[in-house]
Image 1: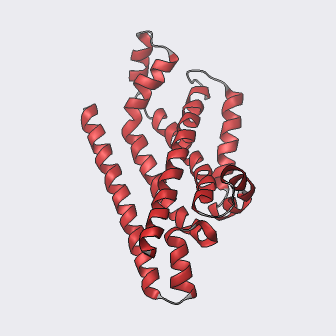
Image 2: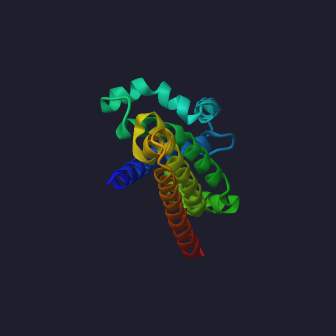
Image 3: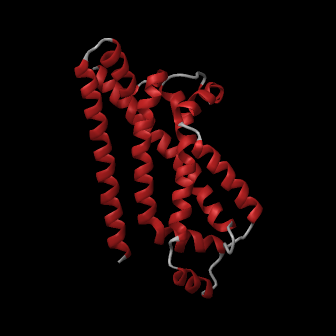
Length: 213
């Protein structure tokens, strides 16, 4: 029973934080691309502000960020520890990576396609929504898959300081109680979760690539 609960907590933390990281990170990535030099809506001041914020957040280790955001977690979910509280620093840590993935993927879109769409008189919104994002989608999916895998690892770190999940189970039973089987099983389950996410991401990316062709 403990393993089922811990596995559910890990899945909940990982996927919930992935969802919020995508919701926050994708628009940030779009803003970076639009406001960069020679972008659709060039605004270098906005670009540099976003660039600095994203770089700062990316440079803070997840363990330190969890501790720093205890007050924010307590404000948002009513407590600073636990599975729900761990989601807050996890998605804030992952969102900058999603933004960079979005920025890189959109910048890789063939400029000829963009120019062809521009010559047809598409609006800025249509350019992003109907041209750039669909063209970059396989690359975006690939990057988001990597972020989700990293968040599974983050969930184990969060478990060590009261976030619950397989990390907490491995610590409480595998380390403190010297039950090595608990440690091994926790690692095996985490590896299986990573494999499932990777396989799902690869399958979706290949399907999108075939559709594009």
